[in-house]
Picture 1 (cartoon, one colour):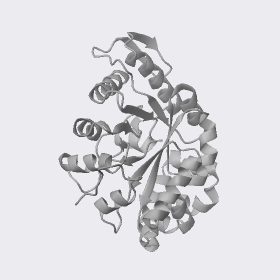
Picture 2 (cartoon, one colour; picture 1 turned 60 degrees about the vertical axis):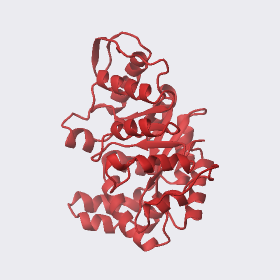
Picture 3 (cartoon, helix red, strand yellow; picture 1 turned 120 degrees about the vertical axis):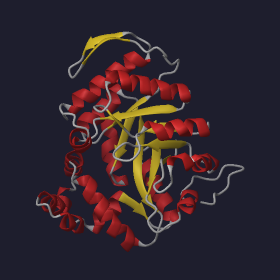
Length: 325
């Protein structure tokens, strides 16, 4: 089982991350996973981490299937696999209409087919084949990697509902799941199938100030779960009745009212919080329900970042230590 942390950390310039990346490995974290929305791109933090710390496995959670052309995505994945031989995982998914269409000006059409087609193209391209093919959502003519890698990276697929979860199990090496509770995992994982990696990005805030977490968490939940793909996901999970007030207020343009309408129960379900021991116990529940690689997305609300990283670490390996932030 892996045990990861999301990078980069908020408030720390990217070029100053080296001691933090090294500390993750010293504390026993096995993985560092990046994301891509409106902060850093997914690959630059991992490229730096690959050079700084050879002990960590590195993954993207996720790279959108729309925002890079197929050939560029193949080159990017191959370059990361070359920089971190045997320890890079490409997480790819459809992303969302907000990121793809609203922010990047790219039509968000047929997301399932686009993701499937990109995976199929990448399998061939990363194996060193010359690709000339008409896929359902794009065509490629005469592409071959000039720097093929001897060990193509595993591909895990960002998935929420059954269609993408089945795709992750059928054509991917596993799934990346996000914004769900430990109990939700038990419903989601069987849709992927047996023998696959399940990476879960889990929001964690190790503080006993529940009022603070709920106040900040309501705004975070409102920002995410009003995106169409996440709204549909939580309707499928059965959280629709709890979130109808959020969606109604958001649609009416009442952002403050939308956030205020998020019940404490939803925040408590989706954000792990409490004393560090309680947080680690909650993370273990995700594992017990089928997650193979829990990845902490740390929310350092009212806590010291360095202390939180140390407090949430797996059992300390020999020679480990803590870090002065």
